[in-house]
Image (cartoon, rainbow over all chains, first blue to last red; front, side, top):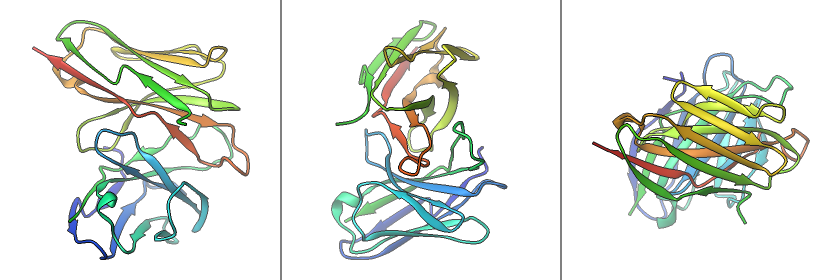
Length: 115
Length: 116
């Protein structure tokens, strides 16, 4: 177990709806990254939050947004859901200590199905 | 174009046999390379991490190698077990700059199936 938790574990939504996914980072970690992983593919970087500010974003539209809270937990919000948003959403926490060898610890993921 | 390419896409091996997975990358400037194991429907779990100066790293029956000159890495699984059935993902990080903070380039993974 990595100490990173995500909720919910599974979710079913319909097109056009909005969804909020949650992540609790490992104790002492100040950075959270979100990834989308389609079936049979590697994770795709959505964005990263460092000390409550967005710090880097992948090639995802603005309807993917997020938050990081003072306790470093985080939310991923997706508006106007599309069928292609169906995927496993992974949260990873790490400690930004100024070095280059930080290790990301992944949560178990939230499986989102859009119908 | 993906900056991290893995091969093969999938493989099936008999329990007890060895196998080697490949990872080629173009990420630059290189910082470190990780191998993760991801069980179906679960988050990836780190197996090894190597920096520029390291060319081999072991974790039990898993041994990773790195050739930073040719930008290639391999993951060798010795005496495979049924529990080794998973996707193995290569992740390469660039040196941290204002443009690359926390950006990890993921390969698509190699799906390994170990059969009795």
